[in-house]
Image 1: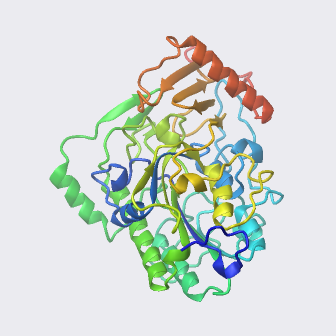
Image 2: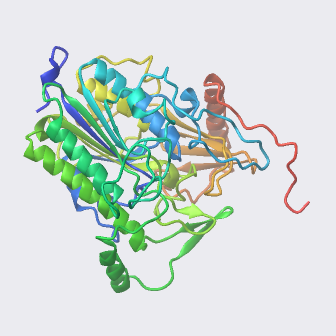
Image 3: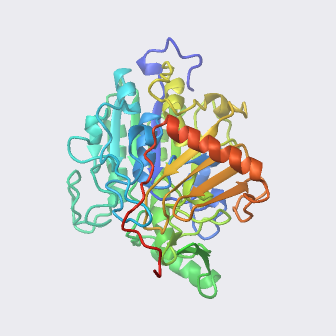
Length: 466
């Protein structure tokens, strides 16, 4: 079990960390979060052995900014990565906001702090925080298997792929299986004198949606037996949202992740590491639901998905199992965010918090231990970019149960009470003008304090139809 208090713990007593990060996995994509079509027995078992969070948020509705926030404990605005790398070049009423195409080497990552404390750090999978010179091994990791500049698996999910940091062993090899094998190999061959961080960052379930051949037939048969009629859809501004989980290929990709999680956790058991290993499971943003045609998943009852600041775009599944801290089967409804991992891991490791580094995160250790509360705070999202999901520049704030979204392109604002309306269907901005003005001003003040880059008018913009 994890020793507490741990201030004086030597390296061999510090807990290990296994961090599973899934790409584009939706809040409702797992059985333990309510899915009846997708199947995730190993992840469900992890949830039953630890704490499941119902209001965990990515710091951005797209990948690279959230990944940077996990690594640094800093808001995407603060590290100047506010869009996926390299981002969309589209414009409309506003010009493209330029941001960084890599995580600055000057930023201090959780891997660097843990390494300084004696940890051995292993990274496998999707990095998407910079090209060569800004790889995981330049940011505190001792090993990098498959991490590079790409946002989707270079060359596809099956070998022969074109990944500059992962050579295939044979044609037809599946990248998720390979990353799992490499992770297990690390567990078996690591320096046993050191605690470790194993960061397994899946390319699944990012597009291109590619069937996992070993499982897809099962879901095709399941769909044929249980689902009737055409997939329902929901209009969302200029996009279309999928309104039912019924894609066998997508379901098979989730099954591949679940199988991988199960294999890694089984190896922890086999090596007798489970009782001193903290396990985190998270997604970098909401599921891809809304595009110009329906995306591969549905985030219902949440609205919309990846790329959007509605709940479906920023709320993610989160499970944490910290032996000796979390209670099996516990559930939290407290809002938490991806910047919180950095200080949480420091405290669990018995290392001093460094608020000058993880400036936008809060340690969740007391919450994990069952305290049920966190200091009150507002959560902010700044996404001033155009995105392929048909999202257009905007920003949002959540304070308590209130959520405000500002849409710059439409010069509109929407207000929701998430306690009464988790699906964000009842816009209260007109009926609650004081709350709307209060939250809007608070959002603007935060943007000014953070020196957030705001979209500038496009002089070439013409109103549609004119």
